[in-house]
Length: 241
Image (tube, rainbow, N blue to C red):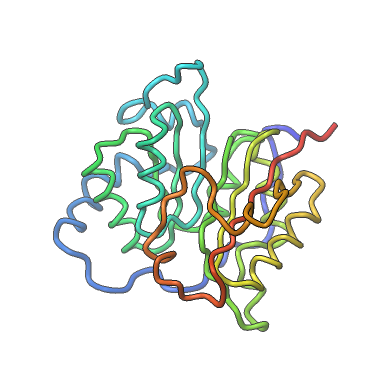
């Protein structure tokens, strides 16, 4: 693989709502003032350039500047908590739902974190513009399960999407997925493990029954809307030679 990759060929089509309730005045203000500072511009993404504005994250004690991506960050609780816990890392959050972006901006503003950049829109747009092997971690937490069989084609986890995840995730990097729908967990296992780039790291039942170290429960997770307790899947990106 190389940096001049071939993007996903199918046109991007998102499903579901983009906005629900009316935004509060503070949320509207943050969308107008803070979001432009943190929004990812069009075109190929240069991570070093992206995170130099408005201010760079703190340097890592180890000298590295790893980048993590959270796809569908909801209200931003998990994303901001991760950024606070790991100031040496750079975080990209993607969320199509405008109310979620507004909520995340409030958390960022209150926490004062400088190591997050945001995209309101489809994650596939961001993946297509990231360089090969550029991410250390990808989190996909409780995506829309589209439980009806006729809607499974709308699920985020599809073969082309998994291929893009493999392209941007560096060897040794981690893909973390959580859902509270049994069928979506099985669907994700089947699709991800079809890729030779990934292996499932679980060794015992608690590895998928309990969240990984440092996980922060989201508002959606607390609602328990699925048909099972949360299932936590972790995959490691293999080095292919």
